[in-house]
Amino acid sequence: REMSMEDFYKALKNGADAKTAQVQFDTFAEHFEPVLKEGKDIIYICFTSGMSGTYNTCKIAVEELLEKYPERKITVIDSLCASAGEGYLAYLAGKKMQEESPSFDELCKYIEDMKMKIVHWFVVDDLDQLKRGGRISAVTATFGKALQIKPLISVDDGGHLVNVGKIRGKSNIIPTLVKHFERDGENSKNNIVFVAHADNKEGALELKKAIKGKCREVQICDIGPVIGTHVGSGMLAVLFLGKRNLKS
Image 1 (cartoon, rainbow, N blue to C red):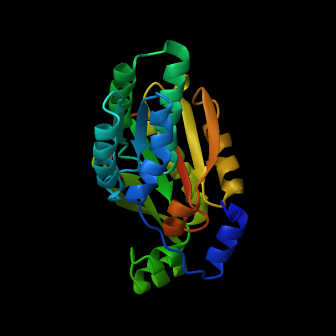
Image 2: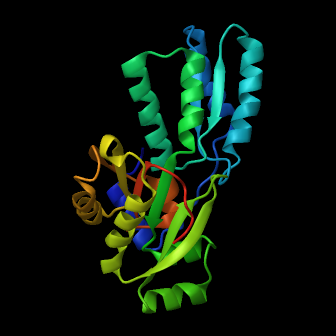
Image 3: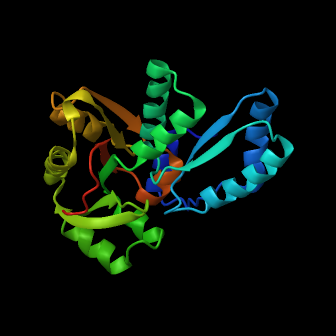
């Protein structure tokens, strides 16, 4: 909120030491309580427990709030997704609300049912950022850059990041993402697809062009600083409804 994404990624490229932290206990009460005071119920779609302790912290905060507001409902849903995947789930929930006006419990069940159907495939371009975050070794980063090898990553059923394979050369990134979309997507012609990028608008537009016509709609979205800190500039992703398949 204090820095544009353009400035953030520029700083990251220049070696800025960016770090992330999970949402604190008090933050949940600060944001949830005003809603409860208005007499409204809350469905919170949380960042995957496979990558953060935020979900467990939120559950503890909610227990205290429900003691204070026993007449209200708060449901915390472990999205098993991150960033654009979490946004995709929120988009589907909003669409469900607009089209069908489900009850609170019906909407919670719908979100729980849909979360396992969101498929993530992405390619990380900035190996130096992965090295800084301790996710790959300095040797791996050096050889990867020299050989133009990019990690192909997905998300498993537990919401963890999984390094599925390697892509050699930038020219193979978009064909690989399209191939996985065609392989793992279900009923794609009737569904929206999210193309996400970290300071890679050109790649996102190219990927959108390659997918357009294979689905109902393509929505481009930015990857913000939290995930951007870990994947670095240049990351490109495709998210869609289908079956999570961790075969490269």
